[in-house]
Length: 105
Image (tube, rainbow, N blue to C red):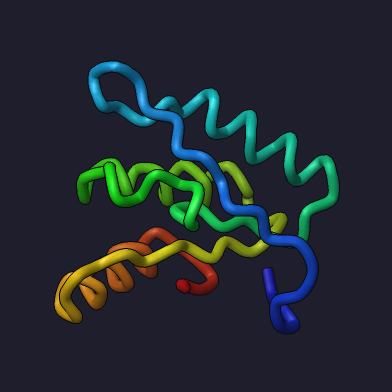
């Protein structure tokens, strides 16, 4: 999918996690599909409402992977980066780029 720049509505997604700390993939996939069906222009996992501060590296990457896969390239995905060091931020950018995000914030 080619994007001619970002525009429109990019909601920040909640991050559904079960009691064992696993990403609730069916719930997140359903949310992605519902939002796309409602007409959003893109999605932002791990934005300020995504509980990113309470998730570990594996959980954050899992959230991003599920969202990218669920969009099926119908809309762009711009993942949130939260880090206290530049090295950690760069590591997150590389990890999210590897799973196919269209941008980071």
